[in-house]
Length: 197
Image 1: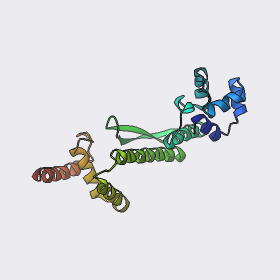
Image 2 (image 1 turned 60 degrees about the vertical axis):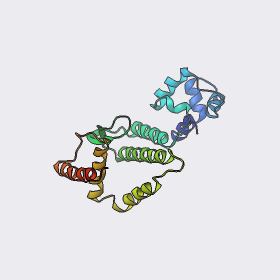
Image 3 (image 1 turned 180 degrees about the horizontal axis):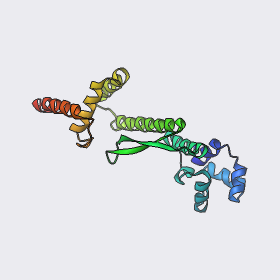
Image 4 (image 1 turned 180 degrees about the vertical axis):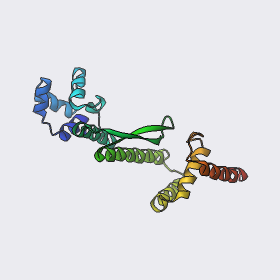
């Protein structure tokens, strides 16, 4: 689905209404949505202003994450939330680092933020699984899923994953949950070294 079509449905805005706001014919909107004609660049800033969305969303085929991002921006416009506080979270990707994430006074915004984060994690996990056609580590991925299902609240699972993240330099050295974690990692790294891992 083209972003503009999703946005119009979400905002409950008819093609004719948008056409009137843009000063064009309804048929132009239909052509844009059907992909028969690109949205002229001169209308993108106007669409950005109307919907408070980045211009990239209007012309492209959108995915689940895009839809959630669009919903979040609509909620922000509707609810006008206020940031109550900032919370530190680990961000993985191009730069593995701790970032400040806003916590809003409207739970609907916080919920959609969590949904976006989950959708991004699922997409990344799927990408990892799809990297190799016949993945030799499929059993390991199955074990990871089992552990998440059965032991996601167990401290030892979190401590071990954090230790592995430090060992493989996914987490910067300065990121630590405290002296107890540092001690745990020293001991587990000794085991790794003893077995030439």
